[in-house]
Image (cartoon, rainbow, N blue to C red; front, top):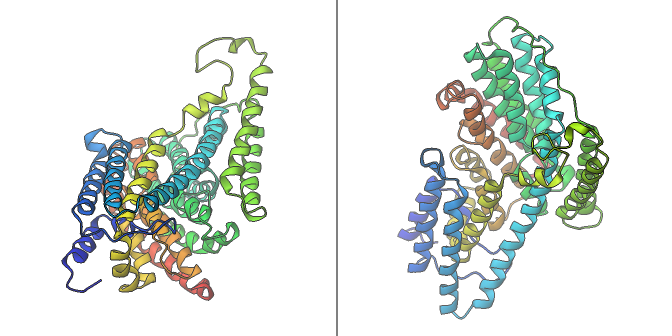
Length: 469
């Protein structure tokens, strides 16, 4: 990249606001990538993606699901790629790059579908509701509720994902302290930080860690090297905020929820499915998604058993909320907008990569800035832009980094979203759940404390895992 190349600096400037463009490129070794960044088709694709992602950012105001603009953009971008590669006589290379991206998405889609179905089934069996009822009925002080919800969020999110965990813990806060908005706001910040930090040290805690694991960049057990940095990322802001927690005990609520038949069996099957995915990947060198789909098949068989062995006459109804257990109902409850959003983003990134934007900007970040500062910047930018397309783009680009640097970008992309309420799915969801109480400004008030935890977690990783850097 020439220093006076205006196109390079244009893309670099766009990268500051749309970080995915910084890394979009490369076919991940799936075919020869042409340098078409200066062509009219390449620039058109770049502008189209920026426009589509601007619509994603404005989802809340436009009331348009985020998957819609990126799915349309993905189709148009690949038409542009096809035209560009046809003109260069490289249709075969284009097909290789596209097939590689479709394979990446297919594995991610099926893995998430299996995990979401398990989470939905646990929810339908009242496992989460029973935990919430137990917490709100114990009469803990506000101080202990703050710490208990934070600790549970940190340790549940590595398995149940950070979004589900945040919603569960926030429901506890709203139930026991709805008349104390200041406490609920601080508790929501604590939960968002804890859920995101907890998800960073497990392949199952966040989509970003899942993508890193499935790509074979970090082994399952190696994620645990991020445990202490993740703890510090949550504990430091939590400790600071705990000194400002209101005193007193909320009135205990008498809330009893019975776990439906088979709830604990489903939990056991979920744990066994995770173990199967790990074993398939580590021992048999099979993709983890194969283990997850095998576990989903077992869950479906168990769902059939629950259905045919249900002799309760109260369930002899066609009403969905009352009728017999149906595993396909839980499949339907998956976050389809999120799954389709992943499709659009992955195909958009792959299309921009086919035009060669990777080589143009990877040098600007990972060569000129260095891997450490580039990875720290990714975490900061993930507070504004969704970390999922950022991480997929980094994986697609596959910069020449040490193992410790791959762990660093996994950490920063996972916890950087905690800096702002809009920086993670957990934060956005809680703004809706505690509407008017947990807001962008209430979170921003404590961003300095969250940022301190962010800095200390990076320092801890650089120190503890220095041998990997």
